[in-house]
Length: 512
Image (cartoon, rainbow, N blue to C red; front, side, top):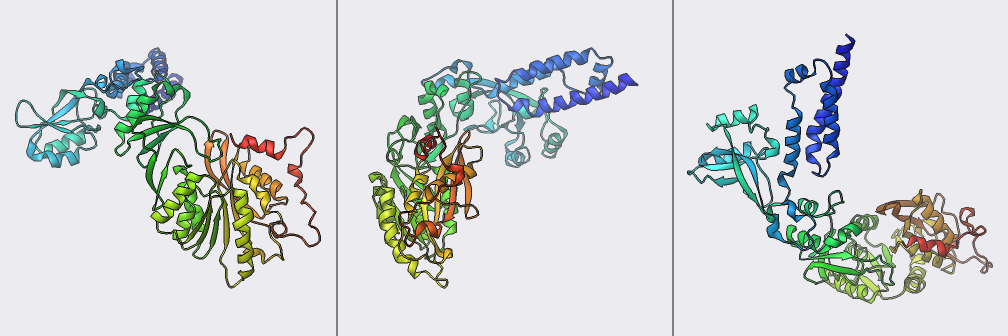
């Protein structure tokens, strides 16, 4: 009894491992060879158990030779092994011939049959599922060898379908030639790069440009990777790679053309708005489209938006489309040029006032002037809101000190004070808390219970892009009567202690 109980327990373990092997292993990369070796040890262990092979036979279980055969099938769709290490793309070298199962079918029933058997037919880029039979007028339907048993026999449900169409269920073998055009991007790159190294086939698309961020081990193959991306993605005619971090005054990064035309002037659409710009001279990040839309959703017609670091207009233009009054600024002359262009392109040039200034000067000049004019006009009956967007994550939080005693006069209703949306990077374990504390340092007051933080995206491991939103406290925005020389006390959590970096020094680390 004890032996039988042990058999049952071990058999369950064996069966679970088998299902895992069937469903998971054959869908992973061919380079993963460790699991079959462990499986072989498991089989060898079970072989020593009395009655084991009787159980295997009774359950029609697959044996180790079948496992090895299926493992070989993993390489069925791999290009020719000789392409390993290729750095200059040679498309002809990817040609190879594989054996696939086929069904011989009368041409009169082809269309109806394909609908019924689409789950087992072969699907490859640029490859027809039906070809002519060289021997007669019938057609050959190509089947996916990964979905057909090793004996090339169909399941009962498929055989029943064939019976309805009066088709012979006999499956034959066919020598199929695969070329470069039939392989997918990931399959090509996995065949070329050294075994075990990460294969990055993803990219950001900006119009006709594919923007890649290649890792160091991929750089020897960068031109090949760039060309493959172009070949496999219709409409992409240029691929580029970022070659340094964004660390210059105008917030655009240096890039290298990997393949294709060196045309950096592109057109793209985001949230139903069209933008044109020179991608090599301005900052654009398609991954921020959701965040752009989130802020625009907060606005209503008649609101006022001050965009301090406007770029080519992803906040400003949709806000103007929403009938808001927009003041947009950017220091980069190229960004300013394309901002003006995009305003006209989207027919909102009359709704936006554009500036080419330093962000601090923009806040101290046009923003201060407009707030001085707008705030006295705001009443509880007129509830248009004022928003200030500061999207320069590496530095924007440092500009918050501009708001300290920016305006003269008496504070208006706290409900009508401008709302700031300030972006920042954080490598802290608690990024929301970190960003709030830095905002408090530069504002000179606590924001506890008066702000919200939003995770925009993960920029890198342990580096988050955050947005902190808050209404500027009245005691910060307005000058106090008779206390012009007072400076707000920093929150205790951010007061400098001996040997502690200054806020400016610490902010430098946020630029990384």
